[in-house]
Length: 547
Image 1 (tube, rainbow, N blue to C red):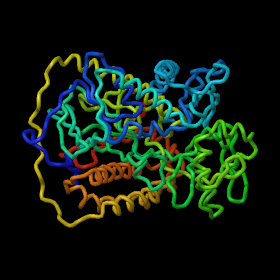
Image 2: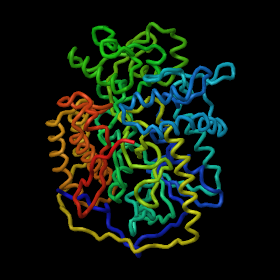
Image 3: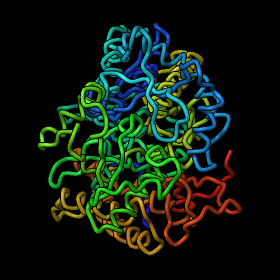
Image 4: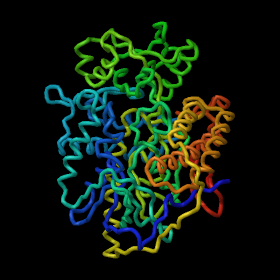
């Protein structure tokens, strides 16, 4: 089996500059900035993000943040909804912890300047699929992430101990004696820098960019998952990619998310013949969890031999629709669609990576000195299927925990800043030019066809063979630009995802194996984890019992 190289590029301690900080945070989304806000004022914090702070999955979140805030709601209800959606694979202790912290974390955002939607001074609470109560706070109608990130970015930029490096690509984590001690980053000018840190927090977000159809920004290429794996950290649950049921489908255009909240407010799904079909698949109809709705849509598309289904809001009050969903109305209007009377063409798209770096309740990974929060990690909150609007909540809770934990750990290390003798030699690789864009497009199409909403052992085997072929001549090269590094990360993560999906011979949550269509609790009430091990082979992993 081909072994993933440990580092992507050559580097030497005498050839690159060095930077020292107490805590390095890789990723500037909600989880990363929340972590930065947990440090002590006398600690130096460096936040590194590969693009602008505003370009993250957090910023694009439409629906909102779930929390028990209404008088009729209860923690037990939110907990039950989360566990039910998770396909019996959630960690109950994690679920309980996160949900009980939700009101406090939402209140923090309010204190930091977030303007959530209100009526008569009270927070407006929406309802989404899988929720039994109205408990989702939102902002700007359908642009919650944009408003939350505006407030948090403004708050964090005021902290004198936090420095932010934008458009800075993180190549790899630096490790020494089985401990993470920093990272290797590339500046906007192409210069490589050693960043040495007492503690490192990984908050790089998701990996929807591995798929042809995705709601994620192009920067979501699974970089954090891949670099953590190369560094030897345990990763798990990688078979669980959540597909959002309703993504705007206009041939030739980029895919835009159509928030779950539309169905929560009464929007109906109909097929090309105008038939409302969700009641045939689940008694909860449009308010069923995302895995069920996505799978139902794919089945209905197959039944009607049509490329999409449609969201119908024509029966709702037009003024309410425009006031509640101004962003979606504007996006659809660009294509001549009036959402108050025209049906919106939708189909599933890759949306949220449930799996990632294994962390405990404090956000600490299996690698000493490395913490993680947000979509890059696997906490056990989501199980096999994430409940709508629990993602920003998880980023807030684990960002706070990881930030506090890393800050405490850094204080115990005193002032032992030093550069370590970590180097990587140049390798003589192939010299033939590669069309990186063509390989990337081919990978995204392959993942959509073979590792998408529906999977079979045969389709997954074909995906594994194709990805292994690309890996053999792409991963051995040492590229000079982000296009090459992103592709290497995408190939690394996609192969792990395929390995996990092949191994899990059952259907659970978002993982639908057509050749094993039912859950198998006797054999698969467990998680799959992997760890890179140069002595044991590429995919050194196993099943472990669910918490």
